[in-house]
Image (tube, rainbow, N blue to C red):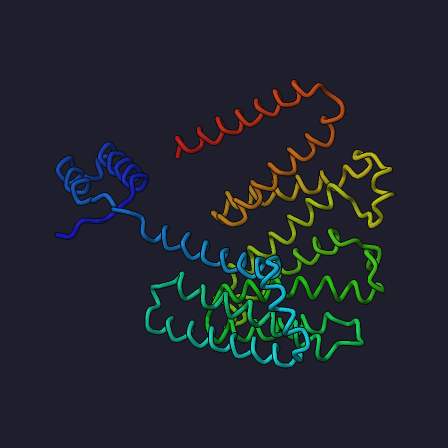
Length: 345
């Protein structure tokens, strides 16, 4: 009989469950020993190694591109291509993107279990698409300032590719491009200022994130081709909202840096209070509905908002030793609280 491979943590959980069932007389002692005996410790976590290896490979590729422009010899080499028409670069990256997508789709069909290598090819294709669109902008938009139309084009391309290739990673690029388009489009209509309809960027993106979250929660499940990406849209929408709301709690609805430096933080306390209330509500909702995404994001931003307020109001008002002592004690209590919940579970 094949044994069930488990990690050390998984073994502890299963053994605790079996012991609980035995105490409740749901299973007898012989059955409990049989179940425990059926467990086998996993060997080396090759999946984790594969994930980190691909991440390092992508990071190395990005650093390689950065080094290309920082190295004197390579910089001189690049200068030789300065007069090359932008259309050549545009076509080159378009071909490169098609190649990466084709390889990714082919490998995904042949080896659907090799998630990391397949998604790496999709990511490379996404970067190539972005470069292609950037050079297309140099060709078509030389004398215009309405660059947001190019980001709109990238949204369409990424959305179609994510649906056709069934790639959640490309869908993430779609939502990131959507956020960039929203930022540039509102900036364009406000004459490239920081305020649009009386709202600065943090306030705009707070609303944008809530709208994206609402779309993911209520409408996306009803659209068949987008149902597979519902959880991704939900998480990205929450992150847009909570990050923007956190920034809003620090800077308020100010777009002028000098004006912001002249105010005291208690004058924009209501934004911080709103951030704490929403993040706490999100955490409670996640706990009640077993929605892990909203629970984790709500809890993390609840802690971030609390400690941000702590730094804002106490950093300049109390002794540094007392400040860090209070900080240490508060984290100790958070750790104790989390430990009790963990042991209870």
